[in-house]
Image (cartoon, rainbow, N blue to C red; front, side, top):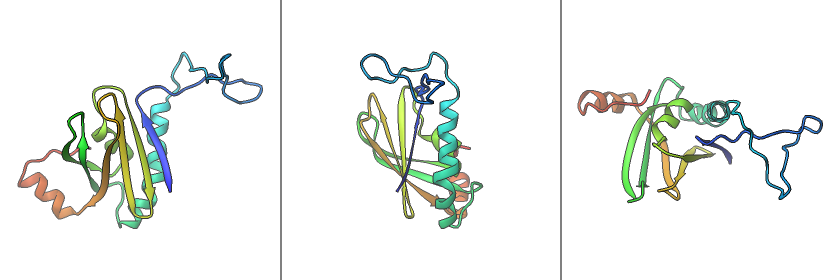
Length: 150
């Protein structure tokens, strides 16, 4: 199983330049950096470079295709919903982002790709990610006027 996390909270840390290890305070906690060095972009790149390519290939897709993200327990009130996004890490993360602090935990096992979103209001909203056939995308856009996340 492959996994990666994306969070909108900075995860950059202070490193000891001699050892290359993260520095810890007197209580053993890793010291956060005063400056962000692009950790959000790096984590989205991990999704793009390590989780998505093989999954897309197994589905006969590329990053030019679209996916549908489904959930039965979103938000504080556990509502159901779905969204269509381009099959890129950037678009998928944008589709799952909320206005507030969050962590997205992606995992891929065989041909199954999922994301779990955690935030102040969600302790673990599970999203299944699946391919969307071209005709399904056309129908969503043309007949239902659905806007997709690019």
